[in-house]
Image (cartoon, rainbow, N blue to C red; front, side, top):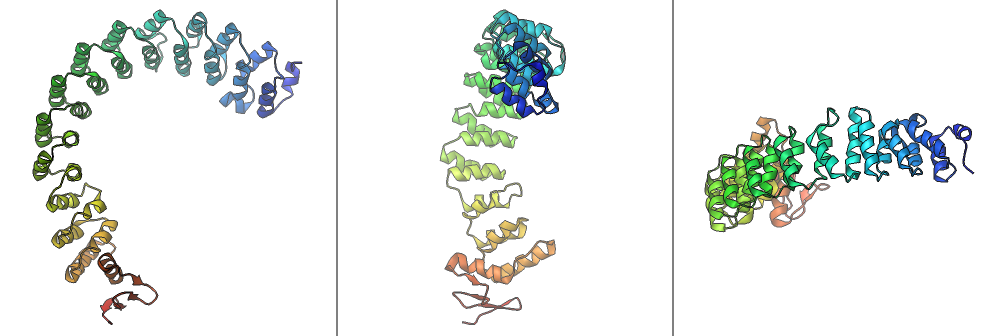
Length: 389
């Protein structure tokens, strides 16, 4: 037997109400409609859990359409829309729903359900509600359309780039896409058009003539011609565009030649990982303040003069430690420490320096209890090293 409206009113806790609906204790359609339309206590008015549970038990599409336009909680309105299958009822929801911005989400849910092509085309081409975020409604309609003439019309006429962009994703006419890639006012849309185009000559042209960096990078990543890629990698003024070109180049001789003239550390690092380069290239990478891959770079540097220069120039604590561990020249270490102290950088104790120095080359280790090196017997005396062997 179904719970009455009076019995329902005795339930104060939303969890009790939710359990009552889930157990099938509420079957009266009028009561379920009232629950769905009005929400309940403070908690449920925010989230709609109880009202949505009531919607789940309603099958009459006219009732669901009423809930979709009038329910107090937006999530409940959306839940009702998702149960409606009749196109006529869905169109009535759009026509009758209140013109407020939060209902954009409800209308978008309608457009995901509806199959009426004419209504979808009309919605894609016109701002049917005049809402602030009405572009989302047109975008939702575009995603349901396959009619290319309509998609082309939207691509050239809609004022919002986030509506034009999905039309480009669905258009197959390459000549039309080329026009979009040149003339659309927004880089997002031009970039999407470039992604769809297969004509390499056109892509090369856009890689050179396009003003937006992201569009140019997208074009470069589609180029296969090694001569063009080399020219871009060597001569382009934009670091990110050159990087995209270098990432496409596989010829080791070309990469080696590029390493001799490139100044950007990140690009040099890509080159150095793809082909064998001189230590001077790794040194140039390490000396760049913009680059952060220090520790992996140090693996390729053994020249002590290079290491000293790096230690004197870097501001990285971790880098200090790694570099110092590879330097054997005591006089150089002293100079480095004095330089760090002058800059106010935390310096390492002689014990630490000795430990790093010997551990890396002789597998020595500092014993902090005896204050001696375990292998060579050196110990610290007031911060100075004394050889007690």
